[in-house]
Image (cartoon, rainbow, N blue to C red; front, side, top):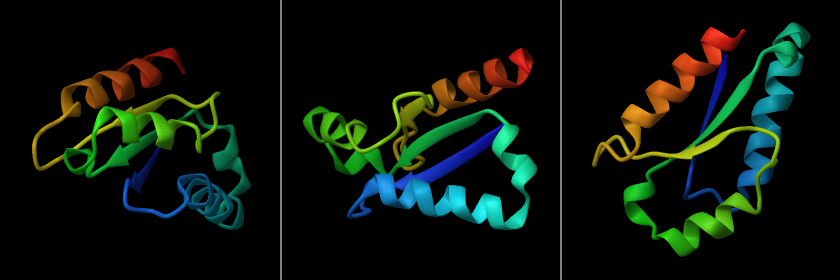
Length: 89
């Protein structure tokens, strides 16, 4: 499972995701065959309305989760999502 962690502070999260994906292609194209999860970090700094705006910038076919390590926001849910994705593969 590939976990892409992107800060909510990025100007364009879609571009940030694509940059990370391109780095995987350059490193090892086999990585493209692995399931992916996108975690948006530092979400203690934003509200639900901002989360909705961010979701529009990201691919809809990749599971997404909003997290904050500082406030422990959705960290357990992230672990569950990772575990569930690993079990399926």
